[in-house]
Amino acid sequence: MPLPWFALVDQEDRRVRRHPRRVWWQVPIGRARGRASRAEEVIRTGLGEGGAADVLAETRAWLERFDRDSIVELDYGGLVHLIDDASLRSDTSAAQVRDALRALRDGDADGARKGYERLRAFWTPVAGKQRAG
Image (cartoon, rainbow, N blue to C red; front, side):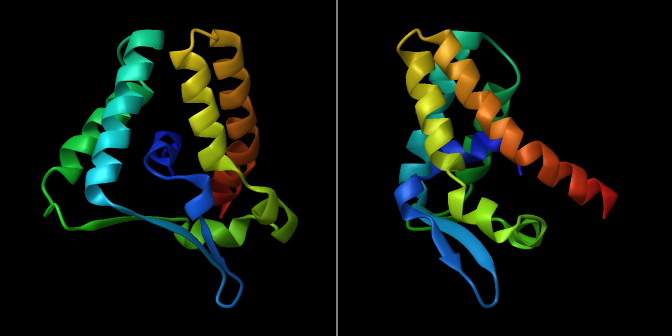
């Protein structure tokens, strides 16, 4: 899952179902587009071109193809089975992205870096399990 996608959602809107196991968010497409634009701007201003800013620009452009009354759903899909219960309960990926973006916007590059490192610390083992499986 591209980590910049968490900029589209709020942690508080995260939904978890135990049986069958599922984690997801739903957000109106207009809100998702706006969040993608704002996050892209913060990243380009704070870090320059490329990377996460490009991912968000591409995502926003893709979302523009859909009707304004659409809903965006961010779903862990099969990844949910690669995350143990305790880690899933403590997962705050969307909040970590929000906090890193806020720190970057406020000029706190160290805070933004630490937030991103925490996010990567959670997702890197999941990505490794996905590749191994």
